[in-house]
Image (cartoon, rainbow, N blue to C red; front, side, top):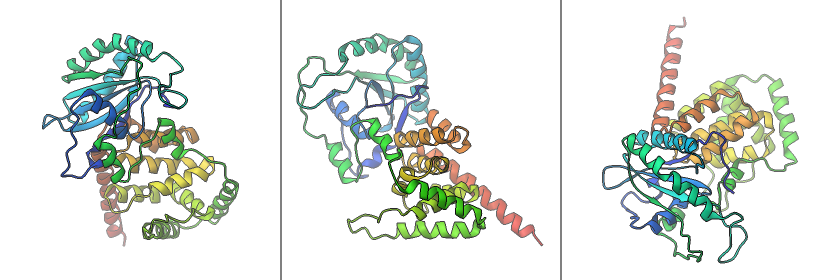
Length: 362
């Protein structure tokens, strides 16, 4: 089920209009349309959550979608609202719709009942809605309305909304819960793990020059990027390939060069590769790989998976500075394009300094 961050920090999905073709406009004209669309906008079905849809001033264009744990006290409501407001303003939105999602039903079959009374939980949030609305409006954000769950106890069956079709056509998945998203980066039982750890130690002992390690890593990325799209997918990741990824990304120079290339859109997506490595890598090698995954998917607009990857990185290494940097950006609600521009600009500066240094050498 949906997991909750102790900090109450929100999950963001920004610039999700890329889900559909540029010439296609999907209209949400009723509360039912909004509720049906939200799981596809977030990428999973939220639970015990407030979901906010930040709208621009031009034709009600969706600028940002975010999820945050539903507050149960006035102090929590104020903190929740401040986090929402930061994300909405940074996305250059000035109007918002807020939707409440209660406990997910357990079991299967029509009319299944929650394990706790959802209407009671909703009543608490309803009491706090005025506080949240007033605080958002004091921040200059116009609250267009709230979307609540149906409380008549009757099962509701909806035809798939148009956004569901667009999501499938775009090749994106929608998960039943946030926990399912977190499983994409979770460790899995693997006999390869101790072998990979031994391979990393053996390669590290060789003290390979960074240039040689970078060349081998680039060849691996190129091979996977060139793999034919024949419907059969990539071959399973070998233990040696996983070890090479871990060892290469532990070198800051290689890691930063990869970030720069990803930011400048010079490489295809390697999201599946990083997830495969995270399934089998030893814990001490997790933080760099998980951070790279977080950066790549964040820049592509998937704040939910980015936060899951950062959770994994910081669980493995609580002091990993790159993960903290990306987490602060996510907590502040920085739009993906700003994050991409920031990394691209930083890499350009590194390249300029390197060129100047080489020219200065005799």
